[in-house]
Image 1 (cartoon, rainbow, N blue to C red):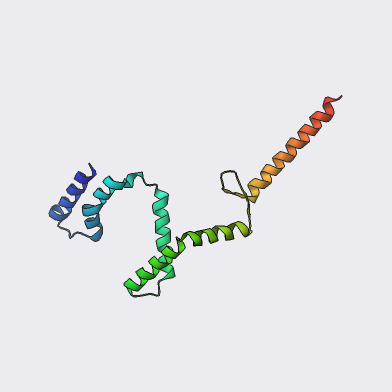
Image 2: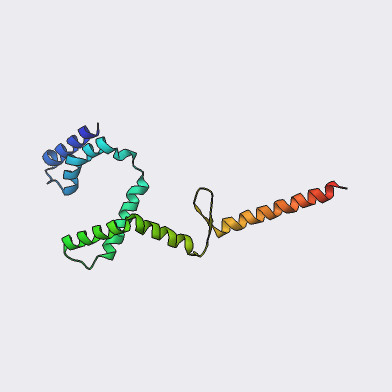
Length: 142
């Protein structure tokens, strides 16, 4: 279905509109449908795609002074390789666990960080529960 839509679009693009095919059009025509059939692009969450954009923007700003495309690409790939190494990831995890971040408190059962506000709410609820229990236990004797 998608392949037929792409073929129709590209036919219109070339013949009806008389436009030259851009890089994006060429990629869509030649590779996207095969990639989707093999790996299922539609099954990918948008957040992973957005994260890729953010990483790309960070890399662009970090290496913006490198004007040679090949050197910039090689440097970016080398940095990504280093950051994805298991020992580097382990060191990052150790540092995050040992550092105290402002406004962040201990982890929940599922490993997520809790904010101080939610911890304070939980503490207030627990204190109120204790007060109720104490009140009930003292007044129950009467």
